[in-house]
Length: 365
Ligand code: AQP
Image 1 (cartoon, helix red, strand yellow):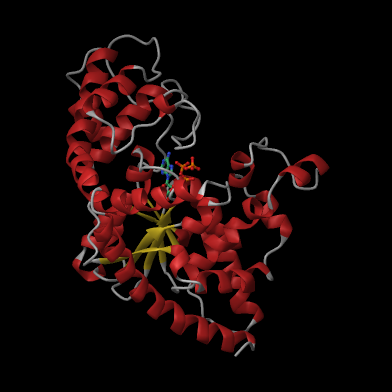
Image 2 (tube, helix red, strand yellow; image 1 turned 45 degrees about the vertical axis):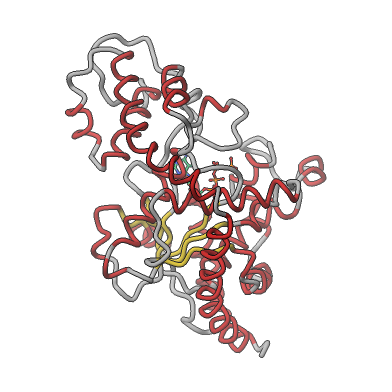
C-alpha cells in the first residue's frame, strides 16, 4: 500500500514542469569528481537549467557542488580544490544562471552536517546496506552485504552513510522537488522514508516529502558497455563524453562506441540494440524530443556510420559553446569564487533559519 502510494506520487516527469507549484523548493547537487559528462548533463543539469528558467520557479532553485560527498573517495587537496572550480565552471557553462538560482559549495553551509547527524540517528543500518550505490563505489558486488566481515573491513563508513548526508542536503532547505538521474532514485526513496520517520517521531509535518524529477531519458549508458551507466570514474574514458571534449575527441569516442551487427535501418530497442538505443536516447535528450520523434528524424540514416556521424554532430553542436565558456570561466577563478560566495550567503540564510526550527523540534534548542 505504502509502496503503491510512493510510486504514484514520487516521480514527476519532465513534461509536467509547468505544474510544479510556485511555492516549491527545487534542490540538487553534483559531485566535484571531474567535469560534467553527457549523463550528468542529460540526466540532471539540463533539467536544472530548464527549471530555473521557468519564471514561476525563479529563485526557487538551489543547485550546487557536493564537495563533502566527493571525499568519500579520498583525493589530494590540490586535486579537490581544482575539481570544485571545475564543477562550478561546468554548471555555469551548461547554462545555469546565478541570477535565477542559488549556486554554492555544500561544505560552505555547515547546517548540512548538523542535520546529517540528527538523521543518522533515525536511519537503520539495514536500509543503508540495501542501497546499491555504495557497493559499486566500494567496488563490491551487487549482492554484497556489510554483514560480510571482508566487506565490513574494507568499506569506509562515509561510503555506507553518504545517503544520509544526501538526505540532509535535501531536507535542510525543506526541498519539495529533486531533479536527479535515475541512478539516484533509490536514495530519494530513502529520503522520503527518513523525512516521514522524522515527522512521525517528532510528531510534526515539518519536512515536505520530496518528489523525484526524472528526465524522460533517465539514464545515459556507457559508450563502451551499454549495460552500465556512463560514469566519470569509469577506467575506460572512451565510455564517457565530457562537455569539455574537443570536436575531434567527441567524434573519436562516438566512432568507437559499442553498437551491434544488425544492418540497415536504425531503430530503438534497448534489449536487442542497447548501444544503438543509447545513441538515440542521447539525441532525444539533447533535442528535447521523444524517442519516436527522434527515430523519425533519423529515418534517413542507413547504417551505423551514418548514425555515428549524425550523433557526433548533434553533441558537438550542443557542447562546443559550453567548452568555450568553460575555458573562459576556468581562467577567471576570482569570478567563480564570487559566484559561490554569493550563493553561500543565500543558502545559509535558509539553512540557518531551518536548523533553528529543527533544533526546537527535537529539543536541542
Ligand atoms: N549516466 C547517467 N545518466 C543519467 N544521469 C546521470 N547522473 C550521473 N550519471 C548519470 C546524474 O548526474 C547527477 C550528478 O551526478 P554526480 O556527479 O553527483 O554523481 P554520480 O552519479 O556518482 O556521477 P558519476 O559520473 O557516476 O560519478 P562517479 O563516477 O564519480 O561516481 C546526479 O543527479 C546523477 O543522477
